[in-house]
Image (cartoon, rainbow, N blue to C red; front, side, top):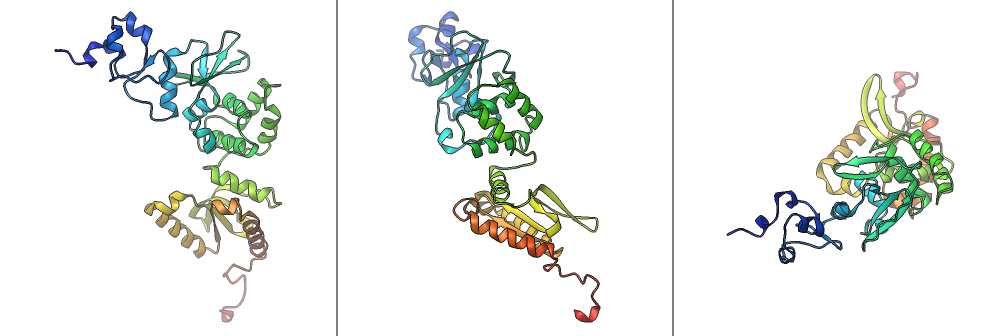
Amino acid sequence: MRTAVEAFPSALRGRPFRVREALRRGVTASTLRTKMLCRPFHGIRCWAPPADHEQRARAVLPRLRPDQVFSHTTAAVILGVPLPRRLERDHRIHVSTIGKDQSIRVRGTIGHRVRADRVRVVHSATARLTHPADTFVMLAGLLRLDELIIAGDALVGQLRWCTVDELRAAARRHRGARGIRKVRATLREVRPGSRSPGETRLRLALTRRGLPEPLRNHDVVVDGRWVACVDLAYPEARVAIEYESDLHRTDERAFKKDLTRGENLKDVDWWLVRATADDVGPAVERFVARVRRLLTVGAAGRHDSRSRGRPASDW
């Protein structure tokens, strides 16, 4: 006796499929009503409930026409772009139709239309989505300024999906689009080299309050010896700043590595300042004031224990 799975052609097993495709392949309507199958979208069946946004997107994939691609926050999720929690909780799938044909009309999706000369398309496994730079521009209508800067930093930094020049080129292609002024303002503050949203928030907190632009992911090298790589640095004042996420608190290996880094920097007369979410939030003014004080003191050399030419008897 055949099992329920064996009642389906091998081409339908292990992936979402359209009901009409199954019927065309000889599956009966009664078989499609089996409780083994999930119904994430109208006219779609899959073998397990989608566990996250990307899986929901891939579940709706059989409904997409050749001129339709994932875009906006859905493309961002597939690309790994960090998004604010309010958007992470939004399970609707964004689909853009390239050209003038009708946009998608499926419950649980949001349809858009975009001109063919504005958008480029890339592939992620079997899914087609808007190019990372075009996705960045499309996010402007959904993200606040700093959230968009974080997305831009991620694209040109830790993810390395594109360059700042590619983001600028996308902004020119989308001239007149929704949120394009925000995109231009964002591009003035996007920087390559960031490795986390926390680092971006930290950099913005410092520079917007008048401090110089810190170096990002700076290798501290003293007398030809590599000491540590730090999130942000002011080498002239020998001040290093590290953003401590919850991972640093809960991961024992990360915790020990942070302690070692701090001691190594102390040995070569660098200050290590540890920043948390509070330091870029409610305590930001106090934190920036502390960094400003350290820069002043460090530039004067007063935290340097080396002799600077003083006689040995002084020690």
